[in-house]
Length: 147
Length: 483
Image (tube, rainbow over the protein chains, first blue to last red):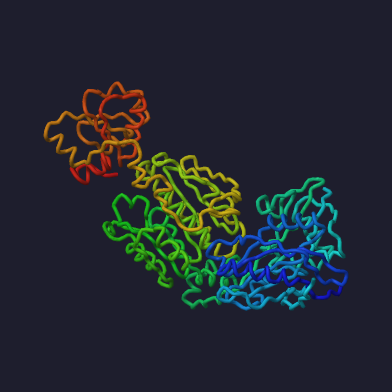
């Protein structure tokens, strides 16, 4: 199936992600994107589901982890609203909004991976990525500003 | 067995949109094999190039992670549901988890490690991993001795040793890294010399200090793996918490008399020490080896198990003691094993941790000075003071609450032996009209005896000998043997 790498995200959702990242600085923040897959494969984000970073104190500056139990909880919540998990967001404190090798090694296909760069406590670039199905790299996907 | 596989959203692109699949299988591994045979593209996302489940792929059989069951061989029943649940990880920097550039091995090293190199499980790459690794051993005593010697011999590139103690002749029955010539030396110096002799190709760093809440995090940060060879509860909780906070695996071992325990506490992958023991035992309930004794060869076995698990973690082996508690009984020569589970409510590694920095572990274990003062008033006397009073001719009776076999090793003159377990039953043998000093080896059991006697209604004056017969030997009469 040919998919259209595109993610629809409202301005409010974008600024909510930025605020979460600023709030958790210098640690990484993370959360789920709940929404739907449109018929052309583009993803439409309906709501955000912030998650507490499960990494231990020292590792949180450069790592995030969403445990399977939390993901299940998110999935159930999404299902109750007729939504799916369509991706994840996390912050890169003092690093660019580009996925790292570590991100790539741990990525799932299809999902959107939003990375927001937080420099010295202030949110900067916010970009979204999707891993290619051969696992070799991430491709940037276009963020459409929804309503 | 007819079972159902539930497919997560992300993988439905590969299954033509199907969210469930029914198939016949008797184990979880078999079910996954059939599933990925049917949808070949999926295999890349679920398995790595060594054909192991990727670390972020979790397989649940009826709501239970197969990692907590028997892994791929977890049996399936008719009607079981198998769920593929992602855990999502990522992060800004790659340095911690990407392959470090591995060091090369000299011809001398290749010759030295040849028995490792010819096994595919180690091989050149594994030996290089050992060389690139760093391990911090807490304690160079009974457990730390064989541990340090085997890790040095195996070629672990950087070994850190933490100990504040000096070698005592009573250590030599089990702490084989030290020798008779080392009595009186700093343990870290003695151990360093021996380890450097075993393997001059490794780096040894000594930390001649007590491990504390102030220095633990900074120390742990510089090592890949921490090995706990301590003999007391405050340090054990300190090592655990500092490992959780720094994300390091804690290779645990403990020994008492004829019994040993070993496990790997690694919060990122399973239970930590607090998941197993949320609270320390009341002070004095579990005697230390100095109080209760230990078979000399026992720490040899348990410390070697710790070395074994440390090496396996470095080599990336799968079946480590993560989520397993190994119990060993040297007297009956039996190994037993318990499964451990991560406690979601664990105060340090659970979902909502309340311990986010290191605390006062002496106080946590009920040993803080402030709490001792708050405890019921305990009359104490030092060995030197007792000697003065006896010399003065004061009428003091001394009760020894140790065991008969200890009494045979050494005794304070003119004492009556009533072992702790019998002290209440034999209360009438202690003349309540006279002042009574109670003693044991180090002062813990005699304090308990005083508490028990008071609770049982004993009316006379009871005084605890501080430091027990050991202090007597130090302060009054070196002729009395220390054990």
